[in-house]
Length: 372
Ligand code: NAD
Image (cartoon, rainbow, N blue to C red; front, side, top):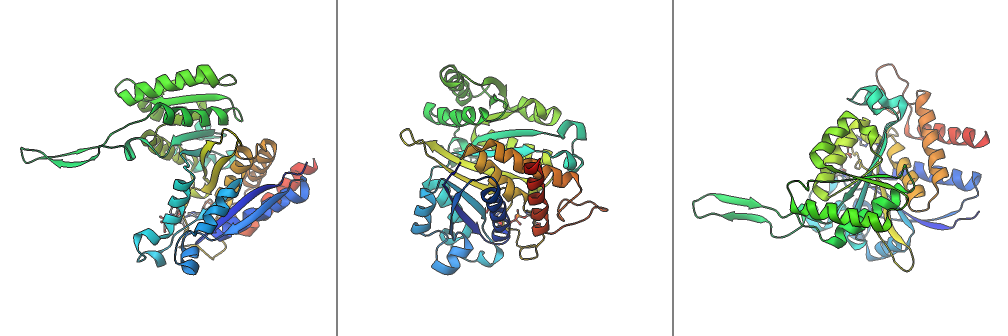
């Protein structure tokens, strides 16, 4: 089956181009071996765009990115841009992409490959084989809602305040993303709020429940208070499949779940927009959680797996190529089982491989699995 989907590659700065380049080798393997076909487009973002055009994202690159079916983003930033004016900083290229495409759903999976279970601070049996997904609302809630501020009080003190505000529509659209994604996974959604003490939480729970009545046919839904969820994530994280929650709780719970996995070089993420009611198109950008790692850029030692796993998320969530994503993840797992480690993952006696060598091994494993 031919599948001409357009992927926009925005490699960015520092290690970004290195890990995106490795990922294009994986993409080529899929084209050569599984009769898939992708149209790859490339653009500059971040410092790389600033150096050439004086801005971190040009209108043309933005428009190319918006016309793609999915964006594979590397990373942006570096110390050489510290003195650039705030609006032209590399990070603004990323923020502009998120804003223009209204990427309100942030997806952070926490996967623990069995071979790396000892890297976690939790006991091996608690995390080995873990595969959960946190869906965090990213553009609303307490980080954005008004009123907010710091004001003087008549007694000489000050008061600082924020507002946690969610509308029905905002809750429905993030709930819909979580329900849709759960259909490609283990079909279980946990909605997290604090409806025991917060009115925004009461509405959150009500809206999730009625969305479930109307659109939750293939999945199960349970509700959990955020404080309990934090506890459960470190007590028994494998009880979860998809967790959907607001901006504030998602910020905290996704960092907690990241720590279950051990290394920054292994963590992918995705940011999604709404599905267009007519065309069915959904803006989507996939990127590693890590930054441009200027301290190791250009040395050929960066771990490419976070970027490669971001591509695996792209296959699964933008193109519904589940089997292909599984094959890629299995290949990574086998490479780790056989002891291949980039520097960030290796403990004292383990053999260290470079960035390209790690990709070579993953590619060989994909071929082995495919030939069976
Ligand atoms: P970082 O994630 O770039 O690096 C933190 C540490 O982890 C460094 O020691 C780095 O060498 C290491 N590391 C990160 N990814 C790795 C990988 N794949 N393999 C091996 N080691 C890895 O964070 P930082 O140092 O705080 O930020 C560096 C720059 O990146 C800054 O300019 C920052 O603004 C930017 N940044 C960009 C993004 C993004 O593009 N989404 C995210 C975070 C930070």
